Image (cartoon, rainbow, N blue to C red; front, side, top):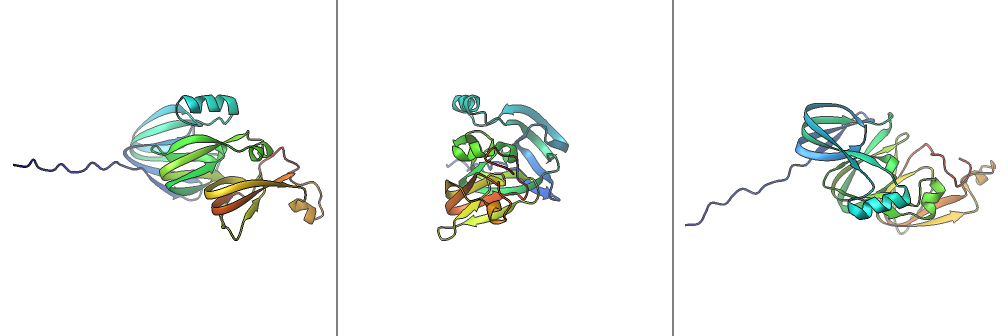
Length: 224
C-alpha cells in the first residue's frame, strides 16, 4: 500500500506595496525582508528585528566592504503582520527581479526580499565620478526590491538601437544586459552656454532599464 502523498511546502513570500509614493508596506506571514537600518516607521502584528551588515554575504563580502568602502547597514525583519518603511521622505520605486541582477547605489536601496542575494560589483570610473567609491551594490535572484530616489524616478529603456547617456549624479540603478562606458569633454551644460558641468557622463548600451532621479547628488566629477 502506497503512503499518502504529503502536500508540497510552499515558501511564504513577503508582499511589497506602496502607500502613497514615499512609504513601503510589506505584508509578512512568517517570512523575512532585509531593509535599510532605521527605516522602519511602523508595524503591526509580531515582528523581530536583527541588525545585519550589508554589501555582500560571507567572508568575501566582508573583505570587499572593508576594501571598497561600499557600506550598507541593513536589518532583517521577520514575523507576521505588516511593516512600513520610509527614509527621509524619499520617493520609493518597486523593482521585480526574475533571476536577473539589479545594480544599485547602496544609499538608494531601501528593502529587499530576504531570499535575494546581495553583493558588490566593480564600477571603476563611474563610482569615482559619483564620489561613491569604486564598487556598487548588486541584488540578484527572484523577488522584489524597493529603491529610493530624490524626486520621482524615471525608468528609461536601453536598446541596441537606442543607447542612453546619463549624468552620474542622477543615476540610481540599472538592470538587464547593459554595458557601461564613460564619456568626457562636451557636457550638457556646455550646450546651454553655462560652462562647467559634469566632467563625465555614463553611456549605457545593450538591452535593459536604467533608473534616474530628477535631483543630482553631489559628485567629484565636476560642478553639479
